[in-house]
Length: 101
Length: 101
Length: 101
Image 1 (cartoon, chains in turn blue, orange, brown):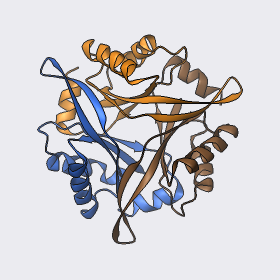
Image 2 (cartoon, helix red, strand yellow; image 1 turned 180 degrees about the vertical axis):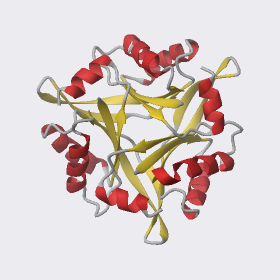
Image 3 (cartoon, each protein chain N blue to C red; image 1 turned 90 degrees about the horizontal axis):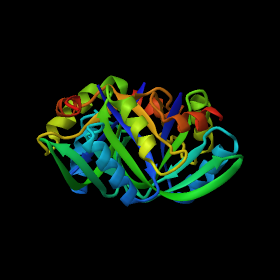
Image 4 (tube, rainbow over the protein chains, first blue to last red; image 1 turned 90 degrees about the vertical axis):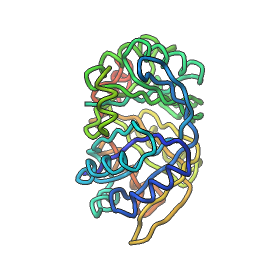
């Protein structure tokens, strides 16, 4: 089964650098890096705001936990937001591509 | 467990205003607001088009249903598109952050 | 139950054309087409890069497999990335809209 991971990064260079490490390590097959997003969030009892760069990472369900843990290790934030989920219905080519990880 | 909610808004000011209410009410920990998207959709037997602003909201699985219901109440559309799903594989910091909601 | 499908396209015109076919065929109710994303990926033992246009497609869990298969058929890539997942927590209007597909 395939899976996706969503994670915002402080900037595009950071997303690209970390995404490339995860691809090289065989923990993901691909990162898609989007344009700037605005974040409004609660933290330590206050409301904060900021600008980030979103990343969507494609992996297999088998590698999902490992990819999330390694991403958390590589990420520059103390408490990065990293959310991963299984995708029950991938295309045949996608299943083959991600299943080979 | 953590969860995500996807919801398009008519504009960024609306996404920010509603996201802030949900953060203040403790139903989500964060909203990420993206750049403009184009929508092509079926409605009442016809095909429509429009431009919207996407929001991705981070919450816990425990608050997911409540957050979706409250978002639907706050949203200016009669029939907003709101889709939420559980994320089995969040990072440790993310699980702690969203689990404290 | 509702569902989402994530799929990158080579350009916006292609995303719009294929999204419209899927809406007309009743396999999805909507496609949201975003601004450019950067992709870094592994393919055939090498690391590639490119720019794509992301699409997020809304459907029902009942139509999910069919929509993914048809999208793969229509997509211009030999091996498109298509990942679909069920969304347990949609709003009432969204459940009604997507349930009518």
